[in-house]
Structure formats: C-alpha cells, structure tokens
Length: 219
Ligand code: OMP
Image (cartoon, rainbow, N blue to C red):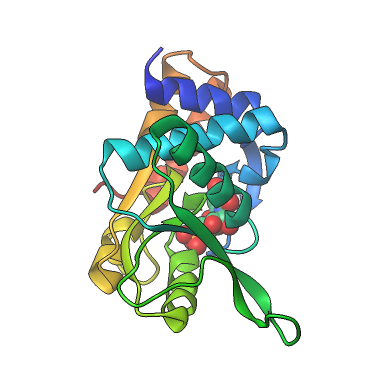
C-alpha cells in the first residue's frame, strides 16, 4: 500500500471520510465530507501527527511555529508539533487563536508561542475547499505579528474552485497571500483509492465525479 493509500484507509477506518449529503462552509452541497473532528483517540492523533510531520519534513518547509486555527486546528497542530519533535527531532513551537478575546489573566487573542515579526509559521488545518477558512485566519494571524507564513499543511485538498473565480482555492491562496498549500492527499487520490478497491465506496463514485465536474479544478 502506498503512503497516500495508507492515509486514505486511515481516514475511512477513523470515520473521518464520510459519504452522504453535506452542506459545506462555502454553501456547496457535497456527497462526501472529511470530518477531522472524528480523530478521537490518542493513537489516532499520534498517527495523524506523524503524517503532518512527514509532509513538513519531506517538503522541507521552513518552520519555527505551527499555528492551529481554533477550534478544529488546535489538536491538529498539537499532534503535528509533537510528531515533529519525536519523529524528526525538530523541536518547534505551536500556538492557536481564541475565538473570543480573553480580558483577564494574561489576556489576548492567542495561546502558546507569542508570535514575533518575521517568525516562520506553518498553518495546520484540516481540509481546503474554497479557501474561506484561510481567508479568515490570515488577518487574525497577521494581527499578532508580521509573521512569515511559509506554508499551510492540510490533510485533504478537495481541489475545488475558490469563490467567485475559476482559480483553484490553492492557487487563489498563493495569489492573495503568497501561501503555498501542501496536502497529504487530494480528492483525485481518494477517487483512485475507491476505484482501486483500497477503500469501500464505489457506490458513491458517480456522485463524487458529478460534484467534481461542477466545482472541481486541477492545479
Ligand atoms: P473552505 O473554508 O471553503 O476552504 O472549507 C474548508 C473548511 O470547511 C474546513 O476547514 C472545515 O472547517 C470545513 N470542511 C471540512 O471540515 N471537511 C470537508 O470535507 C469540507 C469542509 C467544507 O465545509 O468545505
């Protein structure tokens, strides 16, 4: 089994890759959904962190701090920062934002490493569809300090159009913010894994391809 196939099987076994009728953050109605909130156990998070760390190390993305956007990005960034240290001996920091500012104690909008101008930051998130989530986190991150976002690492690139453009969300992210998006797998890898029988789901393929014809784009 290839590395990508192993990850796709891991998503299915963890109940993360699901099929049905879903309304997405962008308003799109999709026949499949990747719910990273379903990685629940210590073993699953340890394994997930290893995949993020592999992606960062393999692509040699410069990094001082991992940023996990609240809420779903928090355990993802924590899993990745631990795996970078234990698997690769790369001991870096992590931080996350608060959804509501704290007005007592240490106060502020961020928890974890205090960001500095020029700091090399990787955004750790779950999935990219239209790029809306990145569009929301960039101003927050930049409000902390003039950080250097060296990349964004996600588990699945759905390879879809950004909103109001024919560019892919990944291309639009680079155009607007200079942020390069790295993914462990993309939707073509998932479709191929289903076609090859690596994971179940052949009955959903028609709907997935139909959806891909409507919103999908190559990059
Ligand atoms: P965009 O902000 O449109 O790129 O959508 C990505 C975000 O939507 C993710 O950060 C999730 O919060 C959520 N999402 C998933 O978690 N899994 C999916 O398969 C699809 C979405 C989505 O709503 O598009």
